[in-house]
Image 1 (spheres, each protein chain N blue to C red):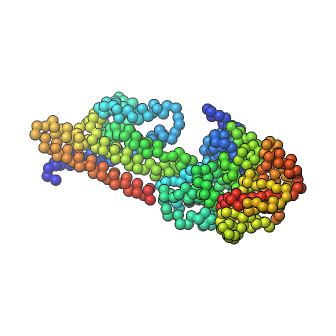
Image 2 (cartoon, each protein chain N blue to C red; image 1 turned 90 degrees about the vertical axis):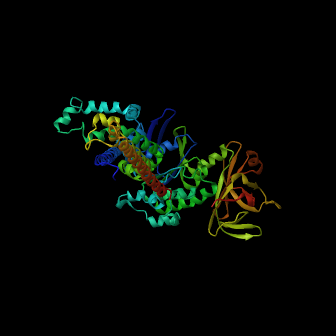
Image 3 (tube, rainbow over the protein chains, first blue to last red; image 1 turned 90 degrees about the horizontal axis):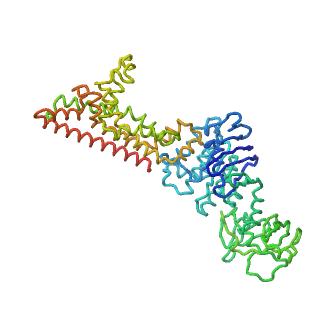
Length: 352
Length: 229
């Protein structure tokens, strides 16, 4: 994907000015509420007209005030998944799904509808009315409806906001599967760093109607470690749980980790907060924590009173722990130093 | 039906004809006007709204008189109509026009209430899914406001059945040509001994109105069931 945007639009209360180029296949637009993210989405989709500027997708101009080009939404073929699914209430699931498909020229229909319906697990819903669907089902139908229109780019405007945690993590794997399988570029708008990290590679940071900077999503997360109190979330893919007493032992690279939460055979996604990883210089002889992992420090970042320590474990696993500068000095933490990461079994939280 | 004279039967038939024609003729315009009032953002909308609603608050006789001036020999449209050999005054067409104008605000109001409930984001979703404006109008807006449209048409039909003031001025009270039920009743009440005949036409009027309401109610309900499924 190559999306070039240089537009401005003036509103009564604020002015949106965006000037950026996106080349990543899956890009996030991150910013607090009211920073102009949704407005940007409307401008890209052709639902709002910029005052001036230029929008082009893969070299084709969607909008160009200098050349008087302003393609209508249906000509742009940019799909949108809205925050609230906006399924058409007078059509059943099947007819909602195929609304865009029917309006796509036959030559452009490159999505296999049966496969998509299967990936999103919608087969049993086809005949239902949309009023009887749950929140997660609605969002899955909305996603499928947009994907089936075979758009050249999908914009997602906070599609997971408003869903409860559990549902959110049920949908994320579906989303990942769809985007991987059908190879559609994605612009994902959200104010949740977590969703951003799970779904995108690069982010545009939006602040007060302007794109402040563009960076890899992990860098944004690391910046947050040093600037906010919420720390950094490590996402771990753990495999094949087997019971061990009251707990569960998972495979993680060459290591194994013990968690209080049960999972499924195959891949399980876990979250581990940077604050839940304690570092020891020597092996603690007795500890209540169930996981003691030998690793080496590969990097130290942050200059405030919160410091991130990047650790490399056996089998290539990476972790980021958060400590205070004083501990860095006392333990003499620097690149190449061997440490023991101590993690409580209950600190590993299963997402999906 | 011995209690109705052939003239009464004619009046009933004319009433139904006028009401049907006025309703069907006005429906697309009413839909367009409601669309304009709800979805189009333009200055001067309030003025247009006022014009559309004016017949609702004006005495029908005034509406009829204005129409007479407009369509009459020396009116704005008079010369044009004459050159095309179209007669409006004292004809069935006149009765239909009078009913259309008087009932129009009721129709628009009703459709508008329905349209205002449509979330504009449905329209945005439909556009981004590849539907052009016309397509969105017929595949989203029309189905979502169909109940309001039907309700509006019912109101308009009922109003047309009872139209009196504007009709008598524009179309006159000519038995067999423009004499609808209310005009026939009016004539009976002015005739000595016509009370019984007036009463029987009143009963017909009540029956017709009830029938319209029942039909509309059942149609609306079946749509409701279909969308709720």
